[in-house]
Length: 106
Length: 352
Image 1 (cartoon, one colour):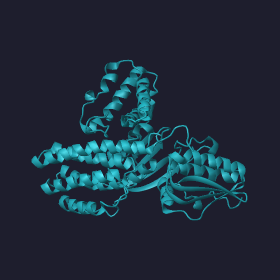
Image 2: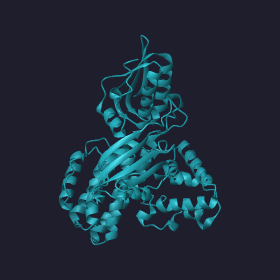
Image 3: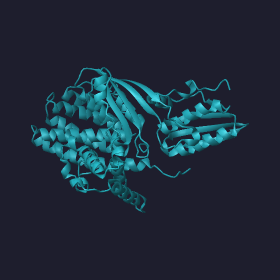
């Protein structure tokens, strides 16, 4: 449960698992900042997330906004559980995979 | 990884459990009295308020199943309160049974062992109080105040911007938005322009604000009630969409407590704190979670805190609250983690 980081062939995978709330947000922020400094290929997996709060959503939103500017290819795992979709929808935010900030062109 | 300010949501939940247990005792007492005095409106109001408080607070602290269940009972007693349904022994018995179910849900909100019993209770309660099952109601979803619908459907514009401390105080904006959505048709626009770069984000602060359009039969008070536990921790404006002048008149900025306490004028601070206490009832036996004196019909001068702020004394209210807060933290961090600490911390957060 929480946030883990795996590095494979230059790609950093940040995996979120279980309930991601305010208790995990500082750690998630640090992982995102460090990953953005260290790699051009960043993947984020939300498929094991059972609950996502607004602190995590705004961190993911900020990462998505910054990645293209910094030349980082940021991809979210295609599988987005309904809990995550509902959380973004309830907050009025785009679901990461459907975001206009997607960095396919980087 | 630990970070500087650890937010223990379990402590808030535990605090809610303790408060709810006390409210349930009072609820049982009121129900038993009501059984003997079925015409007593004050007892009906007391039952309704207890259910309303448990529902609202439960939803606030993440007990969604409990909140959804209690909402149905609350609807029944709202109908009793408004004369649409009678009080009868069977309704009282069912509600007493429901109290036991709520106690179980307090301990295990995710559990399913009470589901059948709960559904059976709700089915009978709905039949007795003569209101239909709401299609959107499930045992896992928080359903708020549709019962307060008293006006034709109209569109409201709401601006909601969580304050810097709102998340640290245990509030969850998503639950509030979900509760708001249950009042009617809601369109949401998230304002993300205040989200700073990753390196500057305070991870425990909400930078997103929301502009909302809600079409509902519920009145303005029902909409504001959704935010009752965070009203001092956020900017909130509520106004009808169909009248610019109404909106200007109604959409008063409610960054009340934080702004009030930052005032340089000690008299103004005192007055604003007093006003705040008039809207928020400090902890009283059996009426712990509801801070609105006006709603509870308890005169502000009966508040144990009233004397601190009364008579226009030039006192430093912020310092007093800070002292209380430090005391609360000391209690919470003591070796036995005195549960009074988390309650006092919540009260301090509300007073701020």
